[in-house]
Length: 271
Image: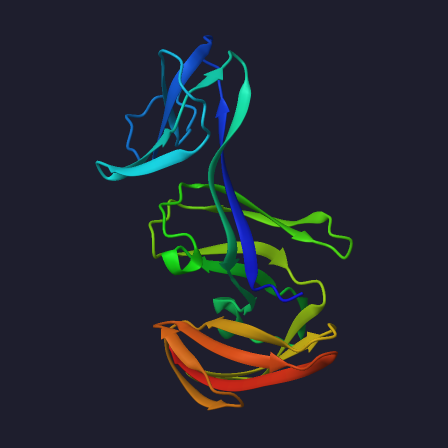
């Protein structure tokens, strides 16, 4: 199935090690980069629990979010009891059919432009990322607190299988979340240095050929990211490229099913 839609469920985990039980408590969570004075006993938790015992109320499990100073405050709509030494999970948010994009990225390294390589650099991994825009159009558009995100996908029988996890930072609405899933199994990269010339003490020309092999039964597009050091200029290239940053070269390379594609380029670098 195409990896274009997802269902998102967010949970808050409360681990009560305070030595007390909070019965029928109102729960508020503060999310954000809250500065605290250095304390060697600090446990580093970023979500602070403020619970106060009060009279009974309907125990709804929905959280409501509001801006609070330069942070965000999540208040549980209802009451809950948290016992001493208890770990409890409460639902924070839920959204269905959220559009996502999958990106396959082959990363280079600046060292590839500083030395001569006599043999190919083979069997290099191609990373897999998922990206989602936190917008109302995507059925989100709410502040997402920092935490671990785990991703599951239904297999052929409908069972959910774990396929990766990553940490995300505090994310405001209308910003993008990028999740590193792992490395592709059936996609492999290999690079061969075709030429390395030292033209002067601080001037070099380097030519690289990158081979991308796809063992899947469907065509794939691989993003190639090359971090080029120094003051550089592309002299020749087999494919269109984009200079996305001062020292970053980007390609989008289509790779046929059960086939391969080759990218070749020559760059002049002045240090």
